[in-house]
Image (tube, rainbow, N blue to C red; front, side):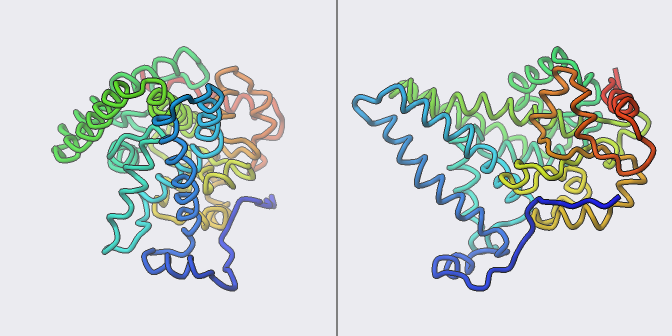
Length: 342
């Protein structure tokens, strides 16, 4: 089967402008210049906008809606995946590594990311445990096409996620990680409490609502990424993750759809993922992987919640001739969403 991918790869620029030449002195990889531009856009739009919401004398209600729309619809996804990529690969050279804190700590606050929690949850816990029993975000014990199961999953994360993460690190004798997670969460809560006293409405819009939505989005995304699990091989990355190709989401969010490839090679640069997928297509084919075209994780999550296997099967990419009909594909997908452990 010949696949044509439309997802972004790196193309060498003939020339760099003055700004890029200057910034590249601090960076490890010129392919990550989009992160610099994204950080600038966020800094020039959201920081002044948020300050106005807090300090303006008479702020019209429509401005709160516009701020939330810009945040949640246009910038949240790209920011989270910039955060994700800069956790896996150092954006700045060693002597300038402190600059990353601006992206992770300061900008993160405007997108529902408390200091230190994303890095430690995703890098130090999730990738280590690979969606298995000790993974705090594991989907195995849930039926992945059940909205009731997802509500239990989400509620547990909302109310106990940080507590469970700190206990996890304590149990693994990584107490410094535990303290960093707790300190980051508590400092964020204290900041929000202080800002609520100063301006409750602005704090609700700028910090609280993005926090609530972001944690939902991350859990819905992880649910879809690890929704289709082979119960006989739950530890096999090819069979407990999925890949999404040829989707607008990959263009906006730095090829995040290549989740199997990411778990196989966490440090692989985002621009290399489509090529890496094609280079290893035989391994994907031989391992009966789940690949969708034209769908992102949140669409897949919604289709699972509504049990719309008909549309999922339509978007499924059969890499081999084992699955030839929509009925075969539907049966296969349903078999992968059943509870793996009780």
